[in-house]
Image (tube, rainbow, N blue to C red; front, side, top):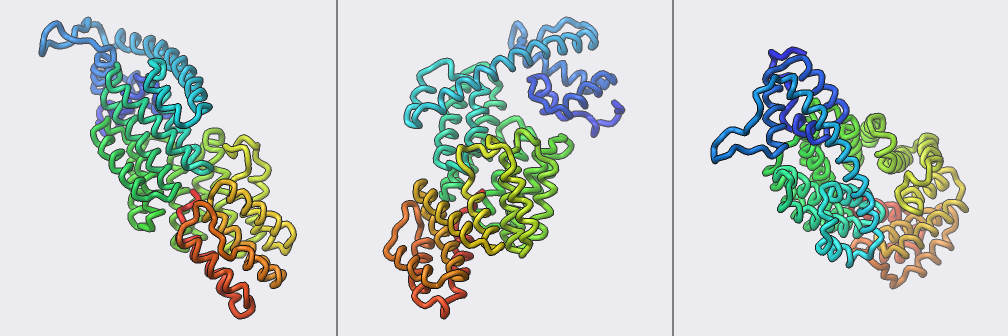
Amino acid sequence: MSAEHPTEHPNPQALERFLRGDATKPEKGEIVSHLIAGCRHCQEATRALWVQSQGLRGSSAGEEPRVHPSSYGQLWRRVLRAHKVHEELLRADRHQARRLCRELIELPSRERLAQVCQGERFRSFHLAQLLTEESLWRRLAAPQEAVDLAEVALAVAERLERGPFHPSAVRDLKAAAWAALGTGHRRKGDLESAERAFCVADALLREGSGDPLERARLLLLRAALRRDQRRFEEALALLRQAEASHGHLGDEPLLGHIHIERGRIEAWIGDLQDAIESAREGLRLLDPERDARVALDTRVQMGHWLLDLGNTAEAMKELHTVQGAPKEASGEPHPPLELDRLTGRVALARGDYGQAETCFRSLRNRCLDLKAGNEATRATLDLAALYLQQDPEKLRHLGREVEGALFPGMDLDALLSLDFLRWAAEAPHQHAGLIPCLSHHLERCRPSAW
């Protein structure tokens, strides 16, 4: 790599991540090769960042930091030695943070904030990162838990402002926690709270380090909010910005997430074939270990899209892939709700009415246990679609079963859907087309399952 072309220099944020031990593998390789090649511009930038990271100060205001005028080669060797020690310390801190994170998660949610505010041992940069990641991980199966963990992550991050950490790094950390909080609210269906949280995250990131990787992550999560707000053009524009911000960082898994989110948006606007192609491209780029849960959820989504296109055989392949994955990959002790629904839909498409009925009834019971009224209503409509094909008398019985029902957590659209179902079930042959319309309407009104 030539030292004469500034456009090929590693960006300052990448150099700073390198010295902190947080650079990606492609960044590390690029930076080491670039510096060894003798680029004076980046040698000076690294020297300045190294001096800053060591907290060196002059003896009086305005005086230059006192650094021995040794050669760059000597300074580079110092950087590499200290970088190795720094990485060892970071590994130890990460190990301690993982232990503290598990300790907090095991506590009742109401006790977590008190522990964080009282205990000095919870003042940890990596703990805030882990709690933020855990919040995003749990948003699918337990949105309220995701919100609670994001709030704890924010409490930890707030306490770092008075510590030895660089202010811009703390702002980036707080921005990520606010984005996780917004994502949790989005999954709960509280789009107003989600919007407010993302506005705070965006403001913090603008005052932060300017790290393009953090920017791309925020844009990706905000695009999901725009999707749930049905502002699809804005969502696609945010994804284009995320892809541009991602640039040459070489973070393929992040690019994979961007492709998958684009597929979700394409599915919402009816471009199912494009959605499947985007999702498959995204799956190719994901990290097999870190993104195992995302890969499974994406395959479940693809299964639903394939069924909507009438491709039962391909949907069955996706279902079998998910069912054959290790149990721990799902990230929760029970199968995801959407997987249960896909299993029932595939059985229905194959004409296995007994299995379909078992799946939909089990799914409805699980949703009721979780106080997920909208999902319970959708499972009820799936049962209605089954009975419409199999046994109109069962459909009439289901209509009487839901008469006056009020599922916990259901919204007005779900309540009206059940009321229309009861009415349609009295004369199923006259209103055969109404039940699929109700299911489709509810699907379009509810927050995304992802």
